Image (cartoon, rainbow, N blue to C red; front, side, top):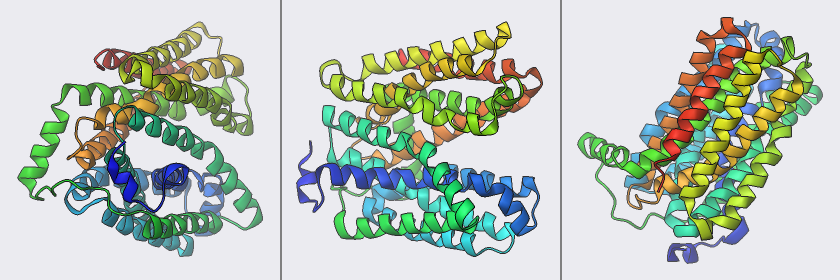
Length: 395
């Protein structure tokens, strides 16, 4: 563990909780308002497509800002990026809450994403500043385990707020969450980047991305993680219609699937924390890639056989999510460990690869929509096998 941590007024579980909250802002904001989308159509007089565009705008802004924040975090420090991001997140959330047209919500979502992205990039870079070796892997695994619960919990919160108050309450909840995290950063988190600040010109930024992207081990860990993310979004994009129309699940039953699969993620994350000091990252990453491939290929086999059911989908998804538990717990640590002075650039580039992979495999599912279950399962299988192949290069 680096000595930097000793200078912070918050340590241990409190420090990890704050870093997790910073990373979770984006997940919370993207999930909490989902149950309110139909009400937003009525309240804003907007079409379904226009309301769905608020998610598209959010994801696009999030992807673009990953590239921007990495170099800024290395040049100006982690804390200023967190503070600016916190202000933007709260402002964007409030703008969405007060909006009277869907166009204003789109603008608010863009501002919200710009703020949330800062939290993700800066928190990862801060974790790299404070921890090293097995400690880095353990802390990343702990953050990943807590982070995994957000997509399951946030829609439940949003649904309760929608039933009790209305759609604006979800954005109010985001503003409150962001405000609490912002105040915690102000009070408890000092600057952790003690390296000489890199210059901020296009040449140096591009050179930094070339150095990071050209590193064999960065590519192995980052691409394994990105491929696994692509498989997840292939499932999320294609499985709802298949599960409801072909497997006979109700929308509410399908909505429980993230919660049902989370125990697999938590179990594998716990295994990582207990074994990584003995085995190192690489063997466990390869196990994760193998499980992701097994789960996704099993999904393809089920689809080709025509035996799509609630149980078969859940079993295949559980294997895939178990693989995710290994990969997501270790991928960031393995990718960032070689770049203590470029942790922001490495974190930003990794984020772009993940979102880019998610977009590509989601697009493949849309292109194969006419093939039903086979379409999304094939895209998921390509992602899972890719994760297995990339994980072979982890050392």
